[in-house]
Image (cartoon, rainbow, N blue to C red; front, top):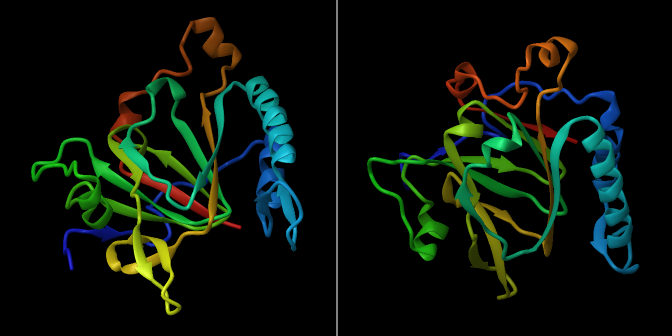
Amino acid sequence: MRPNRRPVGDGLLGVCIQLQLHHLWFLLLVVLGFGFRLGAGSCGGRVLHVAVLLTLRRTLRRQLHQSRSQSSLLNTDSRFFKLDAHVDPMTDGPHVFILGLLSGTVITFSPVDCPTGVRKNPAQIARSSWTDSDIDCLFRLRSLVSFSGDARYNLNHGIRAGVEVLQENGEPLVCDWWGRLENLLPRREERLSIVFAFADCLDDKDTAGGRNSNDVSKETREAEVQATTTHQ
């Protein structure tokens, strides 16, 4: 038991997510993600084909570029995925959203500079996290997470490699853990994540004044840790 670990419900305290009407393709992906598996052919049940995802990705890129959003990434991983702790580039803007499909996981927020030190050994990170002050965010299947404040600018975020546990049939199963090693979240065979990074939209006043809408204000940087998970 590690008393400094802080599991935080299904997400950190945060603000509501507001999606504009011109992001209907985004909402469509949320709906399509419900009850589908990623595959190249029918294997029983409903299958969301890779070709369909690629077509939607192209459409999403076109729609999002027209609405001044900066990037959309489509990432697919096996059950052995991990994400090194990092802060997204400042040029991505203040609005970062991650849509998780096919498998749940745990996103861990970690101090950039920790007085007690940062672990570097992958095996230690998998079982003890990067620092003793890390915060775990349970990222359920078909959920949407947004980063703002310190969660966006001043804390690293990453996904640990996971731990292997033996099932009753003796087969190994890779799991994420949340807060403690006893709190396990089994990983599925594949995980799909779609990352959206939005800049603030320019209005006539901004354009006339020459203000860069991607500039990050001091108030934004000093906002308290915020990240919201919305369930389907």
